[in-house]
Image (cartoon, rainbow, N blue to C red):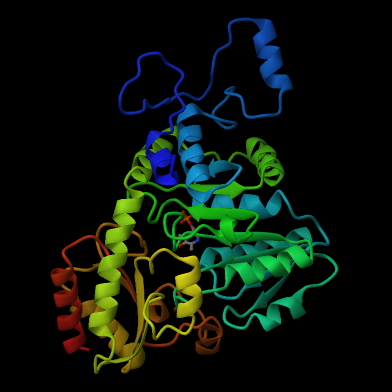
Length: 387
Ligand SMILES: *Cc1c(COP(=O)(O)O)cnc(C)c1O
């Protein structure tokens, strides 16, 4: 079966009732028939249903569906994207290890790398998204992991997964990819050699802004260590959230096709607009890494980024002038969302710090929703007129 079919048809079901829609196992623990069954379950370090911090059928169904979509061997689902990212590092790195990370990564991931991992003796080096020559130079004898996102947040640079994974193989490193922006129906990092893929399921996977969730998938032995770390430290995904997310995966492929076709139409319509200095969308020929994007992505995804000629002040005016698009910290929703990182999410950084991670004063990022493209475009155009 195709991965998208498995994302619809995979079910982990303990009942004989065969509800057509998967049941929700809203339970914290599982009962046993006798002392021997209970002893055997506890003796086994695989994820038998004992207690929902270890595993739960509804959570397993969501995990299995993501495993199928990503072409992975195994996975573990967590309460949020950040807990998946944190667990993937804490379970596999130890004091004295070194991690090389792309400098354009999600803000809370930067906080984990800068503020918490060093407390445990883990060293970090950042390398630019768009200059792979610096990646190899950053690798040291104690380097254990390469970490990146592609497309990057919020500047939408695209990183060549095959090239970075060849580097990881050469130096025997774990390649860990945050695939949140593309989603597995658009890009499968494991096909290009990644060892681990992490997701914030809160974004496109849920797609309707309802629940938080995360998941890490990849090589069996790596996931087993992450599972053992999680079953003791407790970042488990709630069964209710897993049930919501598992349903969401059934429509992920069709939703992403429309998000991407709306985003491409918006990007084409705005390219060259007289208020816009530059615009980035991975599937536009003008994108600096368009050839890589086309090679590793099925479509350009649902995000469009552009730089307003008027800088910081224009960015604020643009947000205020929008009538339909939402102003919210989330992305990957049926509703289109606009954000201006320089005055909001990244306002606390200095201008030099923002420039270092490609956040320019007039940068606007649009998470293109599923409204009719004419309505999205009309709102963006009238807001551009006013800024
Ligand atoms: C939102 C996000 C995260 C963090 O996920 P949460 O579910 O909010 O914890 C990680 N990476 C990327 C790229 C994100 O957009």
